[in-house]
Image (tube, rainbow, N blue to C red):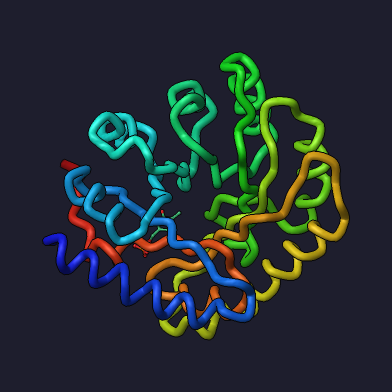
Length: 231
Ligand SMILES: *Cc1c(COP(=O)(O)O)cnc(C)c1O
């Protein structure tokens, strides 16, 4: 991909997302840069991308020294507890917090590093058996537990939708996520601020925006099809 094509993609999606999310006050694009070369990723800065999503710790570590240091990097993929120590001083947010052991480890490592880690709680809103994310019935107790931790701050929610041929099929799940987001915000739980609702990817981001996403995570829409294995 050349810079011209990348900047055009960014501009086009910013436009569509701006329109789809207008009634909610807009949505930020998180550029999902997994498998993409740092040289290309850095070109997205000029298009206005400020947040990157990476889903694998090892890949992130292999690229981070070559990334524009002004990018905010969000960990968006399933995170093993034993990997937290490698990223605790490197990422701006962890979007995939979904279980006690992981939250405990982030808390512990962040306190040791002298920082407070912003996190999103990942919700398995469609109850997919193989999917990461906490179930709805455990969400409130989980967030209450996290609200007592010194080393992290809950800043919102994240969800990954089921694969669907028609994004309309997952609209009810997006809507339900926004209902949780508003409900939790209105509860005013100490140390919990519902600011970011991260949902929607390349194929369903416009529906996500119509239903109240504040952040969409776009990989292929910006950078084109991914090529595995990673460089
Ligand atoms: C890869 C990935 C995305 C982006 O997917 P695209 O379909 O390429 O937009 C978003 N979120 C997560 C958690 C991912 O792993």
